[in-house]
Length: 277
Image (tube, rainbow, N blue to C red; front, side):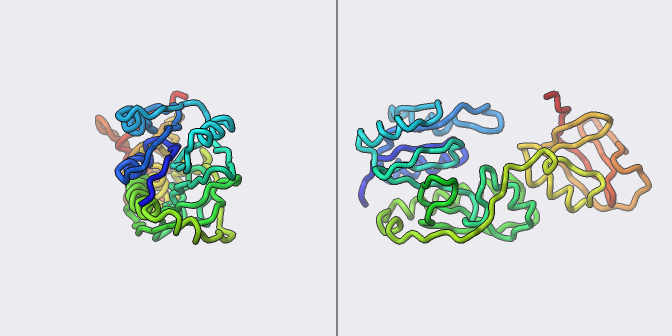
């Protein structure tokens, strides 16, 4: 296996990919990450990995000058793994991006909720060439996993991360073969960043769709409106039940939970808080 000098771009969502590269003996010349709240999004893992081996860390947005510096220091490959900023592309350095859908379907900045919202029965991860246009480069390798009606954002994330580690290890083990045999993407689809409306629970909707919305956004929160306030919801359970309650009304409270009437059942909010933003 040829050992490469690699610049890594990303945060903790795909932190295992940085670990894979190091364990395969490649030299990480620099880590490009960004400020996170370390509540919902984290960068502590990648920074810890980089710090252990004195890898330089940059939190500021990557610039064209940074790419020139990488080329001048002999960097051979850029690996982008959930990095939010556009990385300047140069013919003098190869780049790959790790994307959490089966491209060409599901291009976009945060596609994971759509996997559940669109009732997919399978999804996966694609590694493709880094190009000027987001998520449009030739496909190098991809693999899929099953999606069930009990999956939520957290389980989909974990499945994506495990697949990413596996296919990156395979790719990096025979990089030139995959690079030289890449395939063009078809037309596919683009999934825009979800709007607040899509994240908002509609009490007139079915229990099935309310459950789907909650699973799609998980601990990154869906939105609920009741008692003339807006709330963020991390977890709920819902069941079908005939009732005579007013839709959207609070029908029961415990010390921690609250039950809301929906069109064809009841919804128990288990982890929620008033939105103070």
